[in-house]
Amino acid sequence: MTISPMSSTKEIAPLFVNNAAVLPNISWQTYEALLTDMGEHRNIRLAYYQETLEIKMPLELHEAINRILERLIVALTEELGLNVKSFGSTTFNRKDLGVGVEPDSCFYIQNAHLVHRFKIDIYNDPAPDLVVEVDLYSSRDRRFYIYQQLSVPEIWRYNRTGIKIYTLQDDEYLEQEYSLTFPIISSAILDAFLKQAESIDDNELIRNFRTWLQQQLNQE
Image (cartoon, rainbow, N blue to C red):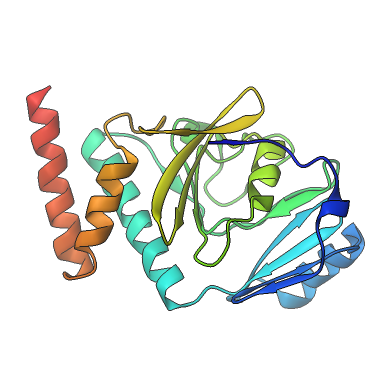
């Protein structure tokens, strides 16, 4: 599967889908004012692309999947001896590009050494190396176009059919079997552990994951 940039915002009509609302003809100034008025301590997440504003309201399943994937990623960096800086759903805005987004989770791994722990300068710092998006109710690709503008190299996207891994190649997101950041990890492996999470608690899941990962590393 290939995801390419949109040709026009005219293709986007006002839309309400379960836990998300899409509003056209929103100026950058209005978007920034909403961010300021809403503050940092809120549950909803905003995404802005060429005067279209998406408002996403995460539900229980959304947050559960997101937290599990976060813990799997942290466990991977620990077991593989990699640096990591997690920035959760930090707001990444580029007025010059007309885009803004708040990922469900994001991580600096390859470029962890290049960013300050408590302050990101999106105009000068690299984009996060890995972004997690949980999309339970639609297949809209709007956020991918934002990440493409920001040059995010890898996205893990979960929907009700499972998880898929995408990497940015020649300005397009191409679906991959294995992760660019963690070549030992495939979408099938992630799906298998998410399936386990339906019947066991988080700590047991992570213990099982670490055991599996150590077995794989010992075989190399």
